[in-house]
Length: 101
Image (cartoon, rainbow, N blue to C red; front, side, top):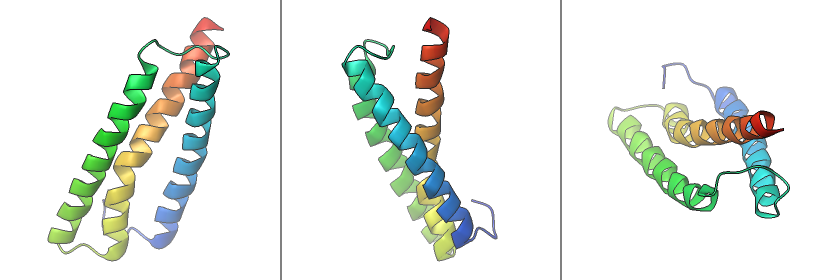
């Protein structure tokens, strides 16, 4: 994360991540009910991507700590991989509906 990351920046990222995660959960639940187009491997993908994101989050936060980052920089490093996953899922699942809709 760039120097100068603030608690406010982190709060915005967590807020956006929360909104995206809620959307992804809803689209996946509707997909399981047959009301939203999802790929056949969506259930497996949602498990593996969570593991990948949490491992990346932990590693990035650890690296930021070892570099002597501020608490805000460490938090930002931990947030970024999870936010990237929620953003990508939200866009992918939303685009699936647009393509098939």
